[in-house]
Figure 1 (cartoon, rainbow, N blue to C red):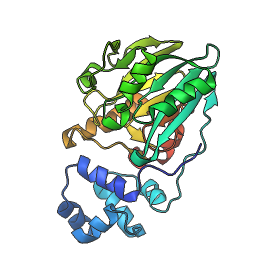
Figure 2 (cartoon, helix red, strand yellow):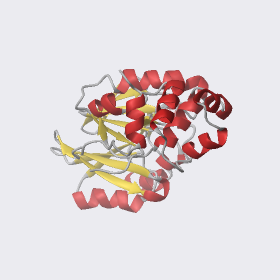
Figure 3 (cartoon, helix red, strand yellow):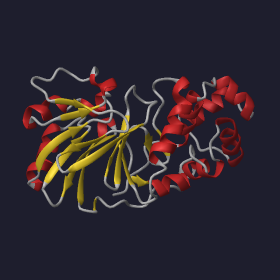
Figure 4 (cartoon, rainbow, N blue to C red):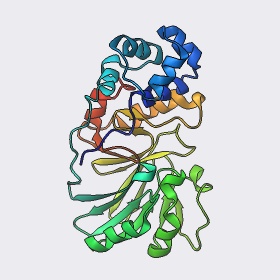
Length: 280
């Protein structure tokens, strides 16, 4: 499965500038360009020069070679297998929100979990029916609307446990007779045939979690292929956000598959080698 990256050059420098709490005037002045020129770059209206890329990387604590590769459309992660290690993954994209949701199944038992159902409930349920998989649980990495808008319909159809971090639970819509179960960060819990490990990856949402299932991680909006999720909680959380992704996700074996809420799947090894936010 391959796809375009979620974030372009302008998105990356904009996220880094926001996280570092730098104004456009601050960055433009240090780089030696006008604020209008910076806005053009952040809006992806033109490609940067090599000198601009190097200067922006220095100011924004990004890796210049990796940033240049994104600017030149030279980085797309290698295709990641969806069927591997006794797991089968089905991806349900929703282009209007540029979001991906997942159904992950255990081949041996035919049991599956639904992950971050943000849209198209009929298509999600159709995957279960077409594959003849039984639903064991719904897993939520965080409760932004584009990750839970289809939850009421999925819950009504499946009536299975819903797993979420308690700091995200208050953001859920009203769900009648729901079996809502909460996990703590660092906890392992059982969702059907899967032992799931919840890893704390704060910054994008109050209780944002990355969920480890065997050799893959459902990273939500903690990070994307070649980029970082927006630190929506504000610049005060940016350093913690970066540190959490590094320690909780990129510390895993290089072959570990990463499935995000936006953009193509990637691996730990790919991101260690190519992500501008995480130079060694």
